[in-house]
Image 1 (cartoon, rainbow, N blue to C red):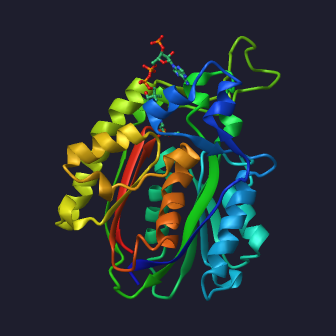
Image 2: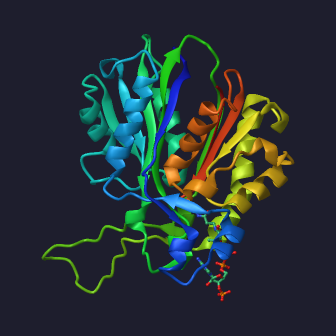
Length: 324
Ligand code: ACO
């Protein structure tokens, strides 16, 4: 078994919506600025939901939509940069919550590229001589990593979870190709959740920041250059061109970035669905939220060729081309 097929896709989104006008009452910003620069109108924000509770809800929906039970699941991978704890992992919490007693579970952190990285890891781990089933979820509560007084980052992010249930299949050709790239030297341009050394032995003059710090211009420049390059490398590996892709399901960080990527690839915007207006940037959850929405609306149909591509903290970039 050297391939996988997506059996179901589902999302779990907090109910509380914070629109741009509400943010404008909290900080010096406006609906016009946020919409023009990013395309974001609203974001969903956790009230008492956690990364693990959202991921658990998504996992339950994935099972409901399949013929499988929790006991059939062999592997659970959660892509997240905002876990509930450093340990246990969100994956292990989901495993316990849904009672997937036969599954091994862990997290992958590649920030906004996390979902593609996690799919790759799952695919590799499912190369086996027997049938296997895996749940791969991107889940985030980025609201807890935001300095709500910092308008330069507070307006960008949202919370949510979504994922897919995949099974390894005998040569059904779902997985086509991928490109994963990490540029660790650029990591300083986007950081969040710094965990400080705190002990009786630690120097007491060091400042640690739990909040997002981002050089927006650098990350923007990185994305508009590296995402098309990553997509082109994945296409070349597959012997495909842009025209062979039916839907580009890109990380939803900024609508302008997606427009620039479409331009660079010389592909029509119609092939680049966007839902950032509703959710903001949900990091590892953004591609699976969009994928689940498009499958639900029957815009993505069986047999369609989809390029999933994410970029973000690390800095990382990743593309996976699949036949849905
Ligand atoms: N409301 C109003 N004004 C604002 C706001 C705000 N929310 N934020 C910044 N401004 C001001 C700035 O202070 C600046 O004012 P000045 O000219 O008086 O100094 C002005 O608006 C322009 O700011 P810029 O930073 O130049 O705005 P820019 O056009 O670059 O847009 C943005 C900023 C949207 C962040 C853009 O740089 C971007 O999208 N970068 C990529 C970020 C990204 O994709 N990050 C996600 C990575 S995913 C992950 O791993 C989590």
